[in-house]
Picture 1 (cartoon, rainbow, N blue to C red):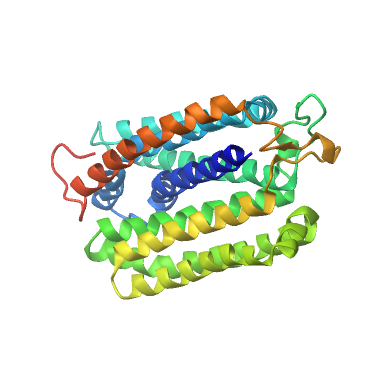
Picture 2 (cartoon, rainbow, N blue to C red; picture 1 turned 135 degrees about the vertical axis):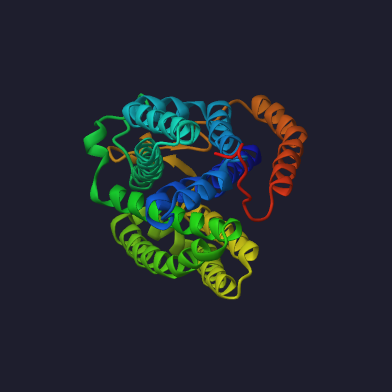
Length: 339
């Protein structure tokens, strides 16, 4: 049974990796039309993520692979029940890619402005859709005995899920603004620094409302935290991280602020995962239909082989990722070859 717990933790780590790494890409896109006033500013935004955005999306693919191999029943239920939402995510992922690559192909202001808005809409759509999907997972879904999720896309747009979606948008916008503070300079940096506290305030209000709604509306999460009060360390650490991140921005320590923002995202995700444990999908029809890390997992030999492969392969992935970020560190310098 320890293998199931290990793979649950690894799955949460991978999803946290995606939210941290691709999260600032999405945040940059969400802020793109509002903070980047000139064409040069917008080119700086695009080139700040240009060397890394496609590699960051690999974490989402890795998360799907872990879910497929470690918890195949959950994978089957999610990708069938959330099929329309997943297709929309795929569509906006494609649109974001096209916008990044096509935007600077022509010097026409109209051409560039159109793709700037596509980049914004796609980034916003991904953040909102993923947040809504996670909100439904937290709240529970109409999961039957066969592992089939009922309902449709409209039924997913319930108030709690929408609150999670909007909170996710502002969380990633804050994360993206802190990342941009490491890459921009001059007047653009000054606008970013003014925006970060405002984004943090909105995110804090939304996240507080979300925490209250989760505790009041979903008894399982409340009971889980009451039974294990030490779990309060996780959301507490997330709150301290975002507070310290704001102080680092004020002092001009942008890299430290980014690390603290990443810690905040990881803390919030682990807080939600701890509240759901050991469930992966909660059924609103009958608790006996819940899919957990035990009844929805692959066979132990599969989990062992996968764990060995992960232990051998992940250091290379992290080494490559760290190398790319090290090479492209520092402020963005525009060249004729830049986006």
